[in-house]
Each structure stands twice: as C-alpha cells, then as structure tokens.
Image 1 (spheres, rainbow, N blue to C red):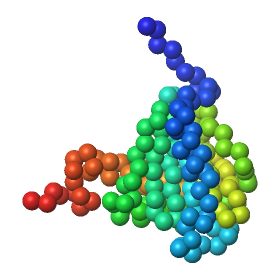
Image 2: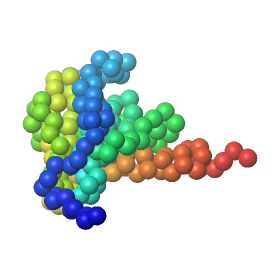
Image 3: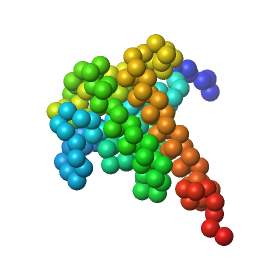
Length: 180
C-alpha cells in the first residue's frame, strides 16, 4: 500500500468525537465557574489548537479552575489530570490568569476553524465573548511579548500534563515515589 503524504496546507483529518469535544470546550459558559471571581473582560478559559506534526493536531483546554485537558484529532484524549495533580492545576491557572493581556492582540470571534500548517490558534474566553489570535512557534522570538508569555505558559501546562501522564502510566503519585 502506498503511503500518501498530507500537505501541511490540507485540513487535518478529524473524528466526530474530536470535533464534538472541541466544540463543547469552546462553548463552556462562564457560569460554570461561578464560584471563582473574575471580571467580565478577564479570561476564564484558554483553548489552543497545536499542530504536532502533519497528521496530529492537539487541542489544549485550560480553565480558571485549573482544569487542563488534551484532545487529539484522531479521537484520543488525556483528561482528568487536574483532579490528581496540583502541578497541572497550578500550570493551567497560571496560563489562564496571565492570558488577559493577549486579548489586546486578539479579535472577537464566533468562528472556530481548525489550523492548517504550523500556526497555533489561541482562543481566549471571557464573559464578553471569545477572542482569537494565532502565533507561529517557529518565529516565537519575533512575536509580541504577550504571545511569548502565553506560549511559554502553555508549554508549562503541556509539560505538567506530560509528567502527569508518565506518573499515571507508572502508577506513581505526584511526588514521584511509590508508597512502600
């Protein structure tokens, strides 16, 4: 069987599960976080579409309560780590709480297309609507400071989620040592 290479400009192949989960995350209302204090123009959720390679698209979903989940275009996911790992909660909260300045470089949107190529799409959710911006990770050094800060912070979330996933696979608690 011949291997067909996907052009970086072609849309990512996606499953219905991925589209439904991504859409659900993009439409979580601020009332879901009514126990937390934040102003109408402050970000309460950050959703980032991250192309991983020519075939894999990851969507990272982070909210003000520290929830952080990963959804993949093939239907895979990694969820629930924030219920087990304080490091994930802290990283996700840091991202969301520091994302509001990026809103100034974003445009209000009600459309949520999937990225093509290597660009990362960043959606900022506020009580006053959702705002979108994008960045090119290959040129992060030339991006505006607000984008660099958010990029750094979502890399921290990704790292915390990866460490949590590895601990889950090994059956280790957050501290890294088994109870003996």
